[in-house]
Amino acid sequence: MTTVAPEKVSVLVRRPGPEELHPVRTHRRRRALELTLATAVPLLLVLLWQLAATQAWLDDRIYPAPSTILADGWDRAAAGELWPDVWATTKRVLAGYAIGTATGYALGLVMGSLSLVRAALEPLLDALYVVPKLALLPVFLNMFGLGEGPQIALVAATVFFFVWIQTMSAVIAIPSGHRDAGQVFGASPWQMFRHVLLPASLPSVLVGARIAAGVAVLVIVASEQIAATNGLGHLIFDSRALFQNDVMFVGIVCVAALGVLFSELVRIVGRLLTPWAPRDRGRGQS
Image 1: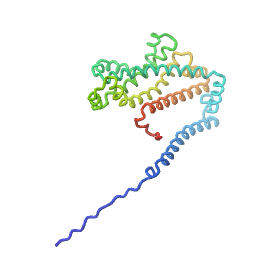
Image 2 (image 1 turned 180 degrees about the vertical axis):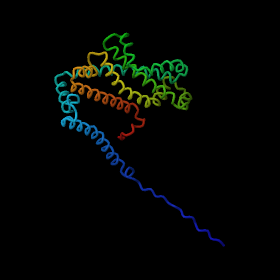
Image 3 (image 1 turned 90 degrees about the vertical axis):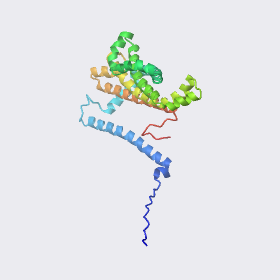
Image 4 (image 1 turned 120 degrees about the vertical axis):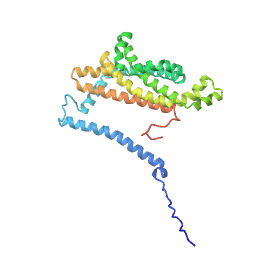
């Protein structure tokens, strides 16, 4: 009689890691590390720039030291010379962003829901989308003349395409089962929008809105350098022409701060409007 030896069974034991044993403590440590890195890297670059300027590795007439830029910006802000340009740029961005977001979302919703409307308008809008938006500035100048109109229209046109594309794609991507469920329960068009289309598409729409927020600042600064008598773009261009490079960098820093604040504001509003959506990667959950 032959005896068969029993097969050896391997048992894999997995021990819980720190994230499972102490999730809150691990999250706080990771969040602290992320904040440290986010602060330390820009600060290190600024310190290197300051060192290079003070050691004459850079020509401080062209690249002023950060301390010089900060002092000049403080003086201009205290004297009230900086705020009019900041406000001029801010109000143009806000007005154009509001118009572009509203029209882009409305049309994206319609085109995403109605295939015939999408077939009629999508080729035309695709052709207009690839046109550089600054190339439309002369058209807007002819339409609205000098003043705020061309600046606001340019921002609105830029934001419109980002929001329109993201909204239409988000509505098209909604599973047909969601719409079928709404129809089975006899949902009216408003109820279908309120309880199906809006919550299913809004997270993706807000991604496009956040991208558009940063692009809106870029476009308005470029536009102000061409066809404006005030604003941060005009300040940067005019100070460069007058060889006031410290003032030029003050304007650049203000533009960067405005872009970050505006984009962050859109992100915060998006999180409040869509508490069910996944959080941004790289950001801890509270």
